Length: 336
Image 1: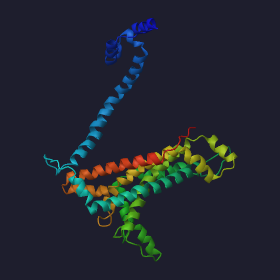
Image 2: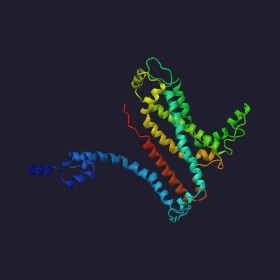
Image 3: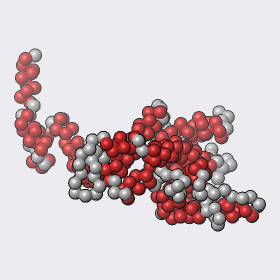
Image 4: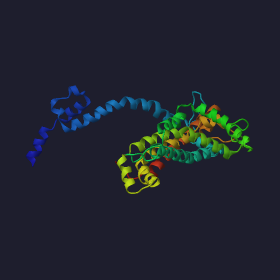
């Protein structure tokens, strides 16, 4: 046993030579080290790191660094000048006692819960109709409705519009005196309400409608792609077992696209929490205000330190929401 151990030690490359070979370019790798299994494993990861180091450096510089700076400035009294005095948790204490912040956070939290549910349900429904909602055709287990490709373009169209344009157009639609909705109601003898005039509930419904309308097309395309990747043999087996459309959807389609639904849920929640331009342009400030708009107003007033502390709270809220959805929506992965 002792002799075998000595032989193994003689065959292994020198540790110093091995370390140098890892640090040097591959062309300078000594022959003694090149065919060592450990070196080949490290060389594979060195190749991957070589490709990732530049984009990761840019990501750290332009994404991670601003987050860290925002966290630092949230503990200061920075007002835009060169001096930022450290004040501890004063900004967070001020936020805790600010009723305007809590009012805006209630609206944002409500959108965080309701907007993903409404948008994703509509997106899944329309995607299922496009991919599987048509009549059964000869030789096909499932088929989409007629003109499904055209519907995808129509649903996705709001994604190519500017958010500001969407807010301005829908602001005119919800206008009390000359809006499209109230104008139609007046023609049938119904007095239209002030959608964006003063009622908090109507303003929230209007905002939720615009958010869902503007984002549902993206999820229609996303879920359509996920449903289209499901093998047709699975649907044929469900039909042979006598499953109807509803049973096929809940027992076959939804479980197989659940990972995509969970990802879309997280993404839509972050989008709902970050509703800034639509609310700022379309909804009057006295009706309702979301937290990003409240943050913007603090920046506009020169309270940069206080505003960054609000941004940190939004960051934490987004992370908590993502972790909850990842935890609650976690289930066994189905492979096909």
